[in-house]
Image (cartoon, rainbow, N blue to C red; front, top):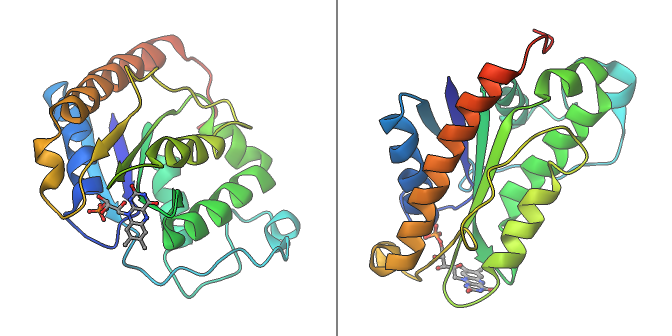
Length: 201
Ligand SMILES: Cc1cc2nc3c(=O)[nH]c(=O)nc-3n(C[C@H](O)[C@H](O)[C@H](O)COP(=O)(O)O)c2cc1C
């Protein structure tokens, strides 16, 4: 089993990464693979609303100048997906939002791809300097809402405090929340894999 994590921060090893790595440590402890993809420092174009993904039915966005199509396939191959973003003006950081808008539109556009995503486990985390992380979590969670993905109920809001990289290491409560989230995600992944039969592919 494997979880693919998408880091929406331009900082490769900032507070968002730290929060995600705590979740990842718990997954690894349970024998679940964990890999982080760096999104936030990439030049990712926004959705053009061309809807060619609906017409083409090829699991791809027509924009080929970035890695979004590869990231969609990596989601497809994973058992779970972890999203993380820093809080920027109370919202998701730009490249991450561009990626998610396009990726989930492609997923929704293609029925067989939608079916392949059924019962994958998702979780999301946010880093923030002061306020707005809960709105980011809420925003990230919306990408999954139209599909049959499942998520572990976080104990408290899955946000971590910190401004400069490394600050989040002082947020004891945030660290605890991330670790519990990792344990719950591992548990749910095992439950789902034991329970789901007949998922296409
Ligand atoms: C453009 C920009 C906007 C920000 N907006 C907010 C905000 O609305 N609320 C907040 O609490 N922190 C805000 N921050 C601070 C970041 O959320 C905070 O530094 C976070 O820990 C960054 O995570 P990272 O280290 O993974 O990049 C902002 C930072 C930047 C660069």
